[in-house]
Image (tube, rainbow, N blue to C red):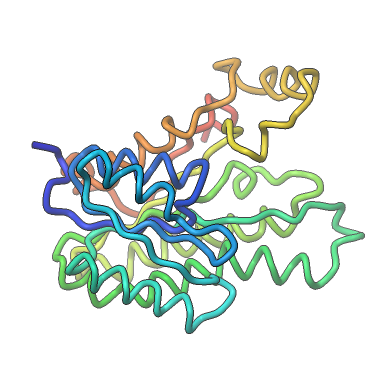
Length: 248
């Protein structure tokens, strides 16, 4: 028996990195999972892996820059799973450059996926989350949304906006039994950090009190906690998974 037995979860951006680890952890804890991908990077591989392990998993697809496609993906997830109890807004992109060089396209893409994509997903999922009676919204923010970072004005703004939205949803949806929380990862070992030179990796590690980059599973564990029975009195919070980089 898993702590999430009977629960149904949608994870956006589940095709790789943190999203893949979250899907695997929630499935291992007993949840049925809908793994969201995009047309150019579908989530079929993680779904095949999970179903091969005996878990219940389905793939859905939709470009988060397109409202209709996003809403259709959420509705498909709810239909295939028979409802939704948990929505993890994990999908995200970066398009970094100095703010004086940042063009409108870079702003539109990053805010469109990271922030407005999460808005569309969540609003589309609300009927199912309300019907759950114990709905959970988990938003993947970032330490950059808390402290800022040169060259990431668009990314930082999108993640800071997601943190604010988390608190808005927490207040607005509490009467419906829905809890909304955010996770703010620091430097995590994903494709984004895989190609970092060793010297750059050492510089990053020096900024982290625990002296190492995090693993996707570190984030997935916190996501599982926020999805489960031990966090029923937790809402409107931002949990840092950053090795101590940001202490508030």
